[in-house]
Image (cartoon, rainbow, N blue to C red; front, side):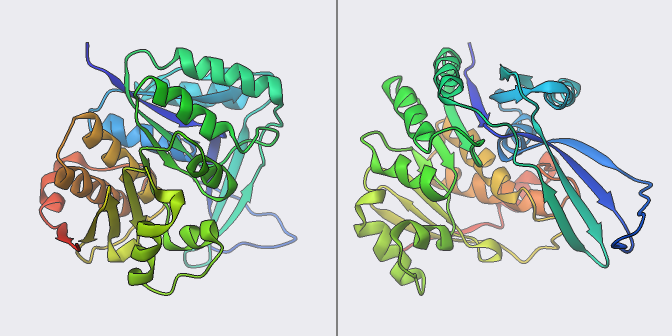
Length: 315
């Protein structure tokens, strides 16, 4: 039986897009084209994995009519899911696109959960690990859940020898890096690394030194530092690599980090070699930026863009 990738989103949303030529404050704005999608970083990961034809199951917590809408959207695209139901409403996130590509966002905080919800979800998570090869954990936590939740999930998966790819920031990331059981892969940017160590990082040489010497990163097999249009700096065990990507026509960069995580997870689940893991992640990230939809890639372009990713070993 082929194993699946479990893509976790703890605070999913319905993402609503309102395109307007001009946003009129203190007035009525009428919208003719509205798009509503199942949103959240982990759901972007799940969508791209599905497009890569990697078996995937979306999970996390969902509630209310908004939760039902998210499940309906996943069903329409034939993405398997197994969310823990909660007795509260999941959230909406609104993006108003206006005045020559300006974007104004209105983000609901989502449900307020408690210790019992956290214990229930950890039990739900553990039961979901049968037949799973890789876990991805993406995004923020709903209010009321502890910053230790991701670390607890990593420990549960590690006991089963299932690697966890963690794409988060702030205290939940720091706590996860401070425990006995480390995530298999993290994907922060340079600013998020600086926040973790509470010191500014001036350049890539200094960044490389931090990753090599700071105890937070010891035992993390993969550290993938996103550099945007400049590609990525990657630490794999004790080796460092610099990946560069070609100049591309960016249509929508939103969700590119999630698409990168999907590519990394897909390659890791397939037991690909180091070079293929890195280049696959870079390729899926690029493919998302050239599409209008968030968390979407054209798989037919994969090989073309894969060949354009350049890799250099730094040590």
